[in-house]
Amino acid sequence: MRYLLKIIQVIYVIYAFILFTAFLLLIFPLVIIASFFGKVKGGNFIYKLCQIWTDFILFVMGIYHRDVFEAPHDPKRQYVFVFNHISFLDIPVLMKAIRRQHFRILGKAELAKVPIFGFLYKNAVVLVERDNVAARAKSVLQLKSVLKRGISIALAPEGTFNMGHKPLKEFYDGAFKIAIETQTPIKPLLFLDTYDRLNYRSFFSLTPGRSRVVFLEEIKVEGLTIKDVPFLKNKVYGAMEEALLRYKASWISG
Image (cartoon, rainbow, N blue to C red; front, side, top):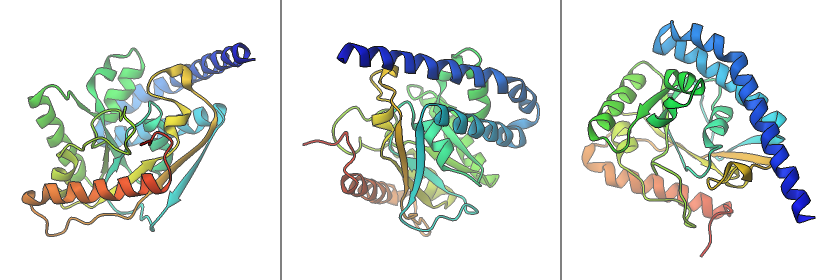
């Protein structure tokens, strides 16, 4: 029975990958057209395409999504969205969760090298090379520029996957510096189920099931200065950690 389940799992993952690629090829001509309309108009349209792509992919993979609002969320407001990073599925689920407002994601530059997908990716996200100090500084300026244009941003303050059994990894300062310097409130998001749907260890861990994103109460930054970055970072970390423990996130142990 165990071997049969493994065979079914492999077939399911191949099925999902084929549909993922087929839909990407279907929308790719539209992405090329949109790329000629600039980072704002073109980028907004590409995000809409990605959201349609996400809706389709999650549906055919049998992943049913639900947003949980612990506080009222105003999609007309601009935010620095921060989220816990635990799975390859985090970004598609982020695209599913944030609707009715424009935003841009901070993404790893190396993914822009993937054939076809990379073209869409580099036209939709703010790229960052985490090992390059100059490149990181440039991406911070780009994120601030996005906020100045009335578009929200989204990034994982952990920087990379949380591969431990604590609720969160240690946070970097970037998101909190940007929030304070632009006086943009922070909206923490929690991915509760992406770890179970697609584990960071293997693409063959993909499974159908539920997907929940929790929208926590926004954290205001009015009046804070750059000296308050540690305070703000700890406040956001504490709110997210408490909620992950309260929801009994499956990767937490000890």
